Image (cartoon, rainbow, N blue to C red; front, side, top):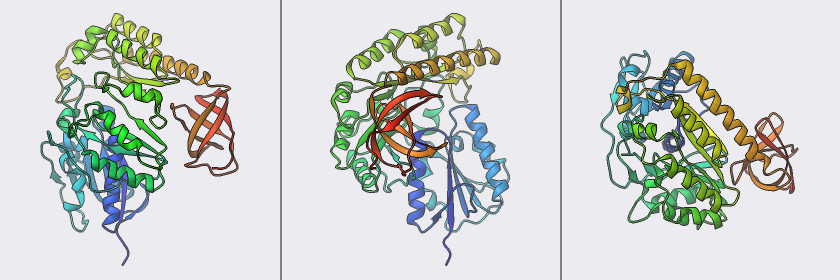
Length: 433
């Protein structure tokens, strides 16, 4: 009997990627053949994002594209957009099942045989609010690096953020369970694990904090690198920075969202720090951790952001030892406080400010990369792009080398020789992967 086929598409954050990997594993364990997105399939699962209106629009576009390509497929839409706006998805002809975040990881319990529905079935309830959790599967990843979900939910209630509505309150994964999955990922050959969640700095399970997670995972034989994904500036646990400074496995790389460098805008955003607090944290990390890569998020055009406020943000970002800036135009979202704020910033102004910050980010990234010209970096290679094998160093420098050998998943020393077009070019010092 020919097995049923399943394909998956993920929009949004690393947490979504981790959850899709878990879903893929559960479908494979049930006997489904996992095929690439875009191939003929019997079931297509689209894991969605709702953090911006642009992300929501992209979700709808992907759903319609799937239905055009595979009209016979049983189409499942899940994730944050399914939680936030199931009604919009119901109006797309051909969608079969809409599942909110609370039931995302039990999709196979919701249907036996994938048969097209006359009207979409909606399974959506209030997200889980609290309590430690476990996950039964081991995520399936084709990439070199694997994501590890350690936490979910948030109660910070930033004025612009829909995530507390779509994912509920903070809760943490049991330490023994996440170690179990990490060990299995390493046994499959993954050499780097990236810790992910909604607000991972708030991790707390049975008295263990994020530093305890790092220390437990570092003890896994065969794990070469451990990386922390985005972490809120007020949540770094005591001792984490000092541990990073001396660890041989924890990557010297932190992505710490700023959002705004103006105190009044931060207050209206309901952020929990001032520009001085953020600056002090970044300076402390840069002084403590050798060659650390520090990245941030900056939101442009939040209601009430005038020229002075933007100038404060731009000046702070320019002054701090940051390697890159992810720039996001403000997007009004339902179920958020900022939805009702006056003083909207005109779109042309938002676009102009965004361009200025992206140009600043490009300059800072190039300057950070140039620091390593003539030095040797340890690179975990991932794929071949335009004739170059590329991968990332411990401190998140993207490096490309020419090689006649396949280097995917090889962790090798590279001498950096130049920086070109956002890439550090180098030469392998050891050709045996």
